[in-house]
Length: 120
Image (cartoon, rainbow, N blue to C red; front, side, top):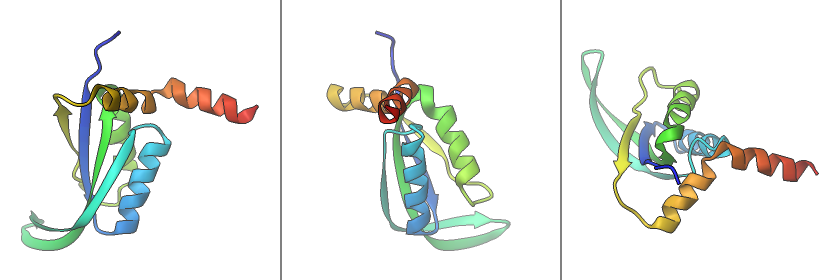
């Protein structure tokens, strides 16, 4: 079996509805196996020379390194921020069953098989 590297990928957005839409889209396209939304959190940051404070919702995606580029591309396209936070952190250990599930849910072949089953 090939080596699989797993990641958590974090982004933030300014509304719960936007966070859910980002999460749902990533899971539907199999760019991520799942996403968890938490918030609101208070973010303090400098933007265009001014220190800002804003309420944001965090979205934490679980995916594989092989699907990271697809997830990043999706987030850049679907996100409404000029410079969205997209940070990947490697998962160095975890439940073998859970990590296998993440791999299965982010495999494009699984998506093709599901479409074939749904179509008849």
